[in-house]
Amino acid sequence: MGLHGFFPATAMPDRDWWAALWPKPEDVLRSLGIRPGMTAVDLCCGDGYFTAPLAKIVGGKLYALDIDPQMLEQARAEAARQGASVAEWICADARDVAKLIPERVDYVLIANTFHGVPDQTGLAQAVAQVLKPGGCFAVVNWHPIPREQTTVLDQPRGPRTEMRMSPDQVRAIIEPAGFRLLRVIELPPYHYGAIFVRSDAEPIESTK
Image (cartoon, rainbow, N blue to C red; front, side, top):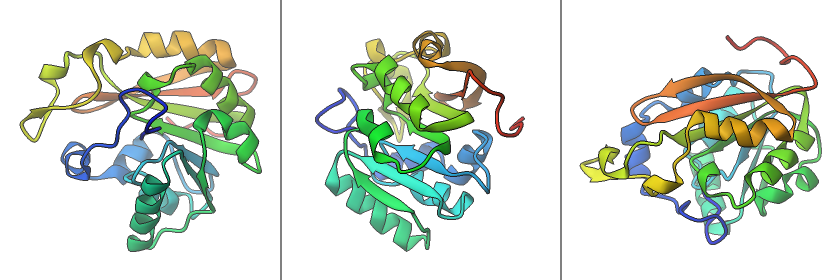
């Protein structure tokens, strides 16, 4: 959820308002097609709001990566609190993901960070290298709604209006990196999930 100090406008917000937005993070993850039996990466995992429930779904076959060691410690503590097992915690730049994950994976998730990545196509290319044929890459983003209209707990939240990206903008960036868009799902009240599959193969299994 943030590469603090590297990617602009990706600082980790208060955990309380993520809970106000998505009180059931496991349901959000399942709607994105994440399911038991997968091996996954939580890219830019931040304080672990999605990490622990994701680890539970995939039975511990999860790599969690963030550049901020303090965020990783918070995520680790939250996973322990929820009794979730994570295969490896990695403190590194997300753009090096292809060099850092020791196996090909089924699914890579990046939530609330992609808008601030300086080299978005480069990151997508790195993700493609770490995915199995047919593997999926999901980008959870804020809809391009003016920031003053995306209120959580009575305050405007999220990145600056000019940084927000539509699904079509995300598609135009990610597909040239070796993906095709599988589908876009709504994540009310203000987000969507754009799910891409490596363009060289069908998904491992239909997630519709």
